[in-house]
Image 1: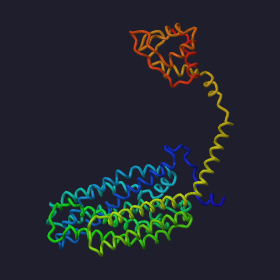
Image 2 (image 1 turned 180 degrees about the vertical axis):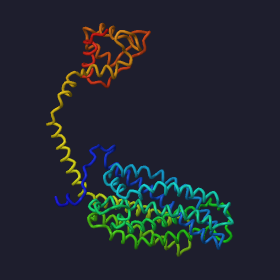
Image 3 (image 1 turned 120 degrees about the vertical axis):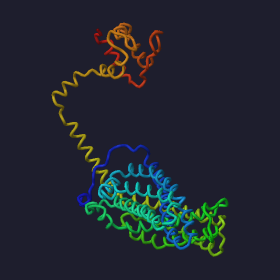
Image 4 (image 1 turned 135 degrees about the vertical axis):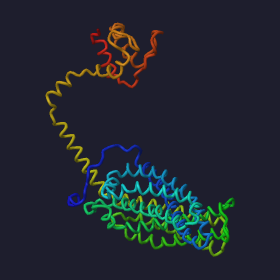
Length: 442
């Protein structure tokens, strides 16, 4: 009871899920991993473009390299946005109370994502299509790119802060806006882990991009060769993945213990094993100087893919562990509320006027008005014959009328085929036929 008094425990929304919970959870994990892959590539490519453009102020080859990388950003950006719909909808459905509560508590910061995204996308296109125009003013061109890069650094920071906030309902009373949410544990380790992953995946992607047999640079390099480009990207992937040996343990050690379990520990250890295997393989590639996309490189890709899968599963396990107690409290409160509401409703006497109104309602008349009146009038022809004729034909045979309403045929060539009503129950058909045959049509 003390725990309930300290933690905000709202009633749950008692609506059925559109799909089984396990299916929705699978969609959430898989779609989020696809989404975050392209977000990583978008951010990593933007950072690299900015960095190589700065170096390009002194060495034109790096300016050409920046332009080559920039060509990939808008595609990855579009893929990231489109693939973000499924995980966003899934998390809204599965964690409605938690996700919306976190968004509401960070308020202006959360809603500011919209202008941040709009600004970033517009400036990215401006940067992409003004490369030649600002060839003589590279500093200004770099300044244009710095704004979307800043946006791409801020947006995931806000999102990660909200995702972290939703895991700690017991701390919601302490949060009064975005800045106070930053004081919760694990925000900054999550963010640094995300940045390192972005650079590692981008390096791996660009290694493949520049290593294609069909790769021909859109603009000529003076000095850099294809192997040099691949070497740089391999070094980036190796360094960024190696930095996760620092950020990964930091992330794990700063997780509040309430969500830590042995299953989470073993999942993370599994991911670390495959990450170490990828590091060893990358180091051997670097030492050998063999930049071919061969069997060893495919093992690196496979190892890192498995690592990402382990880490995505680990996030789900921690999220479920962290929210389990609060979900149980919320389920108990929801059950108590529903029982109290049901009891109050059963014991609530209806007003006299309502009782009188209910006693005068003819269910057959309601059915006739909603299903039949559009085509049948009392004594005049509309789409179908008047009800004076129908009531006369079936006056002594209500069962035949019920059968006709449910599955009508066509008796008269000068009238269109009547639409059947197979969805009506037998009781509804009885009520409707009783009204048709018992009403005095005139």
